[in-house]
Amino acid sequence: MDIQIKFEVYKSMKSNLKRAMNAEFYYEAIFIEYAITEDRLASILRHAGVKYLDNKGNEIKISEKIKKVKGNPIFDSPFVRKRMPIDFLDELTLWKRDRDALIHDLAKIPYNHEEVKQIAERGQVLVKRLDNAVKSINKHFSQMS
Image (cartoon, rainbow, N blue to C red; front, side, top):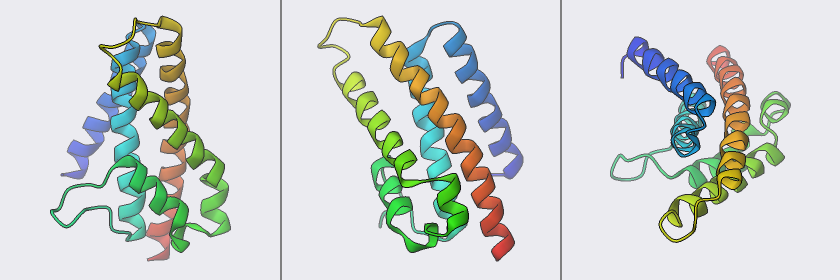
């Protein structure tokens, strides 16, 4: 994807996330947070030169991306771990599990406004932190090459 188009799409997603949270459209916010998380994790893997596509050329799942960031030695430098520590990656994994449970049980459970709101708010904080970390780490990897 063209860099300018990618920038506009990402800018739009961040704007839509803010709008969804302000309007209390928490499911919409969670969907956007998930998409941003997928994109940011793919970006850091791509910049580090770590494979993030399967044999068919499709992106691997978020959980696999997180495992790669946790387990690949290229991410073990103090610079990277200061910005993306293992406990932060564990928080992302937990948020994803909570999000998955909520989405998969959508038709089975009564709507719990507070639970959905809490997951959306956690996601918003995690996405912002992830975005900042990835920008910094990607710049670091670009300077190394």
